[in-house]
Image 1 (cartoon, one colour):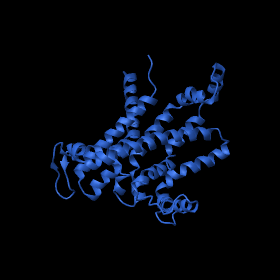
Image 2: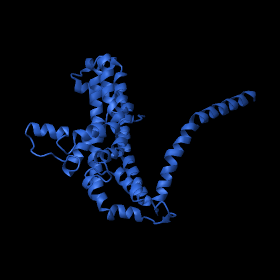
Image 3: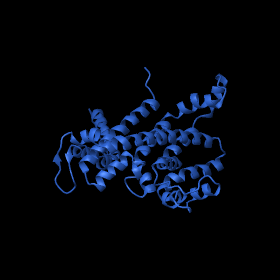
Image 4: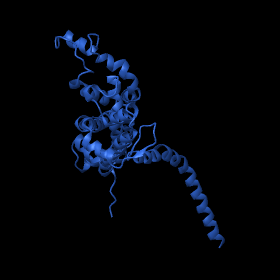
Length: 306
């Protein structure tokens, strides 16, 4: 009997410790993620102009989004898909390639190069007004125009950040430049922690080149880091609309050339104050991110074998 009581006391104590460890995270998760998501879902079924009390609108916001919002269907959604593919998938592949290349460099230079690649992801918002807007300025003082005119490629300055023909490519270029974030560091760490004996055994078993080494050893050995990098790349790809706003200096961007779903949400929420409709767009974005995350999980999650 005493033994049973002792075990029960142990389990209660252990459960309390687990609860104490989880509680701070659960509190922050509920306060900043779960509750706002629930509120946004509720507001998406209402008309809410911030001033008056929300009034129930049923599915009207979603019907408007899919059938009545010409800007969303014609510009925002195609821009977001293009941007997510190029910056999300392209940035993810670029992060892995650069992490693999750095893993081959000596430790002293590896640290310097890794810091140089990671810094743009931290200072990107600062660099845009002081570097990129100066490079792509629409007058003759802009570095891009100055060099193109100097070498005879153009006769007149190009309005890089006001033209719909150039805005999205510039936005993608700047995004890729600053895409080496925490996912890149996770991949670099994963590659560096792979047991070198695996490579030696693989070459004995018949692997002949670096491409096979990456496919059969490197990627399978760092699936957790690959999954983390994929999730971070997805989140960043759908959350980097601020780059277009910073480059253009306004929301919406010129001729909606760089308008993403995140910008569309900000437009309706903070400029037009149509919070109900903005909430509906937010829910649509949440569903899109969730679907992409499920794809990443299916690709990089270890399957249980029985």
